[in-house]
Length: 476
Ligand SMILES: Cc1ncc(COP(=O)(O)O)c(C=O)c1O
Image 1 (tube, rainbow, N blue to C red):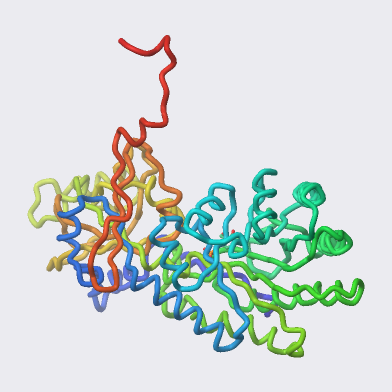
Image 2 (cartoon, rainbow, N blue to C red; image 1 turned 135 degrees about the vertical axis):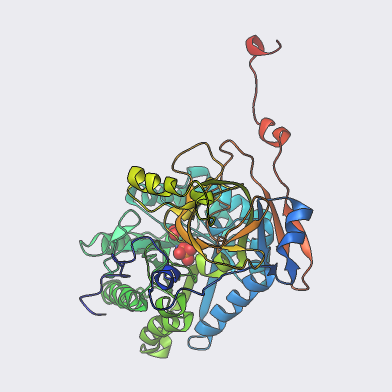
């Protein structure tokens, strides 16, 4: 780990323009980059859009499985004693969870809702790791009774667990979440016990001293979309240091190190230069950094390694097919000979920015939570000849901030054209909400290329079923 690591460089020169636009601004050779997405796993975007309506989330089963297999191979080939847990909050759709369950992933949950979901899907308690900053007492009791591994976040939770465990009788495996400075910025400090000030040591020691508890795991999830494998190496070193200190002082050797998730998908933050192949390390690079540290321990002392991956497994498997429902502003100005051409200048004077085409899509940021940070790709379903123009992609919410891309180069498209947004498989569906529109349908394309509806489009009855009118407001 180098002291000077500062995280991904955000280029001032590019601002929030994607790397492709550098080609557009090149005076010697104009850009030829054209992104088109006409099929997903053999199904045409047009056919999917017509069959299920847009907006439409589409997931590729093939992609989820291949990511899982690549990750398994990367870690197990280097360190066979690796266990994988699927981070439910990244995407809790039953079909997605089931695919990962079939791939051998256990469940990582962060709330009683997710815990219940995992049990409903057939995970046994022993196959569940229970994280999160707040666990209700009744969930703690259920998790302990069912043999789930609670990774303790704070002193109050530890006190509740001690009390529940003594009420239940018996001995229960638990973990502690640790936060530490892996030099990755920003430093996450909301979760767990601080390593540097000794909190983590004291919490661990208190657990070891309690005959009702057994300290099974040291856990640390340093962040998400981490672009430096060395941050993981440092984390492993720090956790191994704590483990050794506890072993030396108490004789107890912690049997599992859980490094959380955080491995990136092939995506770029706004303003980050690509291409992703150059910016995003491979999963092998992370596996190397983590397992080479563990591999240096004498075999008898090598812990179980657990990982709780989310984004890496599903982000690229998810697409959102949208339709263009309106073109706005400068859309007309680029047409040769347009009598409105001087409006472009007026727009520039007004906004301080060059006039842009704007397309309104039938999906907004209520479905695309990650659009705030990530420069989500938008690809037309058909090839459109001619120049590419700087374009703004607007959502369909009645809110000025509903902008999916401030600047993306696209050809002239028309109302009715489909634009597929990708990758959007991580966190977007789970954080989506019915702000002025209901949530769309979700389709999974199986490995044979067959689409399956895995979540119906919502309707008024679905949303209304939870509401109640008190008697005095009923009728009329
Ligand atoms: C405790 C924990 N584990 C795992 C994950 C999954 O992270 P990612 O999607 O970055 O792999 C998260 C997400 O933030 C988390 O909070």
